Length: 459
Image 1 (cartoon, rainbow, N blue to C red):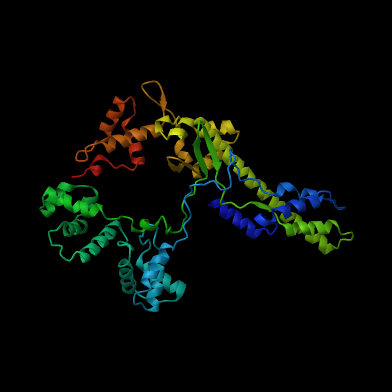
Image 2 (cartoon, rainbow, N blue to C red):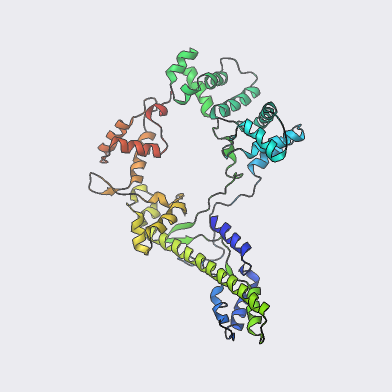
């Protein structure tokens, strides 16, 4: 996506650069032939600026594919934006012009999870300074309440506690038969009065405070865990706020005994030097007497054509670098790309790839830190494939990814009523031959997104 934006910017800024159209490919070839033997009597050769290599050939892949082959990319959505979706609901409510302006400011300050990320007092100041609208805190808060009544429930909250309570309130309004001691009502009381104890899973403390049984507490917790802590995320797939859906840079597909690697450059248009600018140089080269204005114009044209040719070459070089790096990675990890088995992933450092492709390790770092690869078993960042070797009792080297997979499996199979602490996980790993320090296990556990044992406890 960044490449597309960069090419778009260059096309806008340099009139000598243009996309290759399907209907004028032949014209480009004809133009190359017509200018092949043309020389200028001045100090430059027009053939240096116009040659058949100007037609971009950087849509690269390692195996030939038909033009109608399918690519299972994740498409970019053109659906209604999330902020616009909220405003479309808000504008159906009875609002004054000032309230409409306030609503636009509030929705514009929400993050992609649906939380309001700005203080209401700051919104009051924003309206005064940017739109010359003078209002007060109570008015802004009343508009926020309207927005919080929109779909999805929980939108416009300023904290996780408020987000969950807004959703419970919506459920309570719909469930008119809910009694005071119902799981729904109890869930509201827990989040209102014992939120800290709840998020830290101090269930004994909650039971004592509300004088309820374990069964009652369990029913209330089930209500809470069904709520959405990020109400805006429900629209992230088709109504992405401020960013775009990931499209993989590479596609790796097992084909019999080999691996087919495709550099996904379908979003990048083919580029060439503009025909109009080529004709300007052609006309200039055929002119016997050249005025100062013509020479100045040709100097400008030369500069723009040089810039266009340099940009095209830079894009070609980028594509060659990406493809070469991906080929090196796949060649080092063939078993992993054929099976998707994390245990088949060999220890691999960025320096290993840099040595193979003959590039600086900083270049490889830029490649793997921001590029995605699509495989039959998922889409993931290239950097996730890299890790240092960890010794196994059997004598083989294993990757940190394999260790993480082991920890995930251990936690997935633990007794949730009595979850394992880091010492216990370390001991289980040692039994399997993975000898690690407890602090290393804790680091991997945190990196996987698992909390400490107390926070994984359920009732």
